[in-house]
Image 1 (cartoon, rainbow, N blue to C red):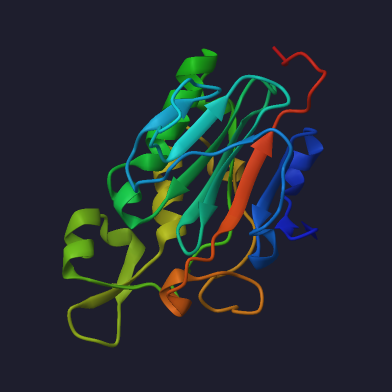
Image 2 (image 1 turned 135 degrees about the horizontal axis):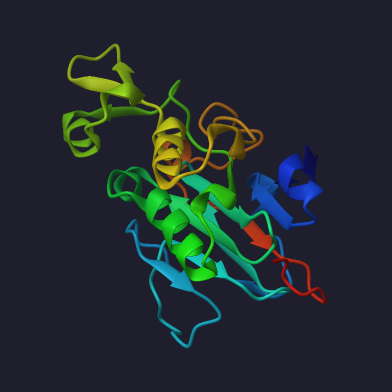
Length: 222
């Protein structure tokens, strides 16, 4: 499902979780109460609100209703994490470097630990990102990632097609989520120039917004 420049995941909508996974039309969207951070392709997970004006991280989480957390992407994988009991949410930015370092798994574990719940209780949604149809990488990336299940040979010698979405999914499974709790919305950013921003395709600074928020005015669930 899509609405006003964003994809929406039915599983999160059913929980009453406000969210959006960006299309190109989301780049200038204004989300009330949105908190973002400087993304650096690392694995830092930051609780917000936080008194760190110059903070750098690649995942933000909050336990406060009414506070929106978001990340911006243009080929990397955006991941929204939600506790099914509506006690906390997280937004995660996972490019190949962060993914190789375990970003998705670290974020799921950090959110579960902060909420004192098992990771099995989380729901994850992966948004639009570059797909294995278009994401050609070389030997250094192949060696950094190491998991052969997410690669297939590319036409060029010494190159490979990487399934970044599946690699992040495998990390979420390692954290304890069941595969049926890992959802995907949207398509390949590189394939659809009319719909998505893609840094690899265009080489521009366009970034799509991905955000999540527990509704204000309601106490978190138990």
